[in-house]
Length: 319
Image (tube, rainbow, N blue to C red; front, top):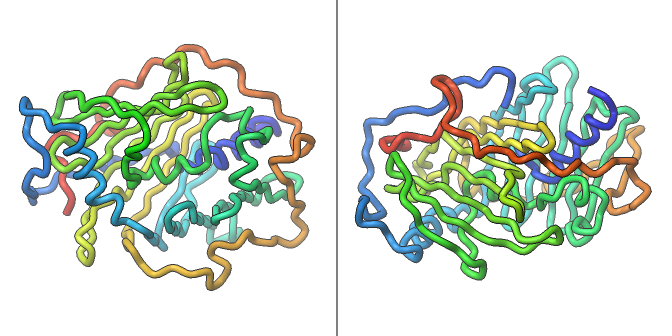
């Protein structure tokens, strides 16, 4: 991968904090346990307030999670074993490695800034940026997606009542669609959220620009219910960014929900690697990157063929 493409991929990591490997195993599962419905069955559609209340009843209570046996994969690098930690509102850390070479990837966020480091980047570089400066950074012009979007991409974000919401609209297979309009420096964007019509789990999210073209999509699967808290979250997340031709997937494995996390071991502290230069993405001279060309119209992806990630069927339930 050439330097421009490589740095662009790094910026996608920073901009999306997103997490599909070349091999994409089937991870939708069928469960015999059928929890009671939390939303009215179609055709008696729930109200927007009912949907938001059910989503928030689960998602707003997920204040942190920890996955020490995760796996991260992508077309431009092999599968890596990883650890992932998250704490609201914007603390996040993903560290990935191999048994032979050691640390390969480190991306994180604390209350003030986010950062990322990839072992194979030449020259060795750790990129960082303050959250309040990202909107004016060269990275923002290269990829117009907010860094906090990973939290939403993980399918555990509550709905923001301050934003205009439209829906719910019925979809096949007992699913619902809600549209959220947001103002950004590049103009209004529309976020499409597709939910399980029974439990209110977020299954898919798409971000469209002001022309209705697809900027990014996330799909979350293999939802599991935590036996201690009773809360449900996905254990597999796939994020695609068609304009950048970029995709990644993270398999969280067994996730511990709402553990007590502190900064011991520098969990929420930007690391310092030896012989690695620091580059502030807010510096207009930091990187010589050209903006991504205006994307051609991208059709909204249809359900994938058998064996690939697809929208969960109505009976998809957690164990």
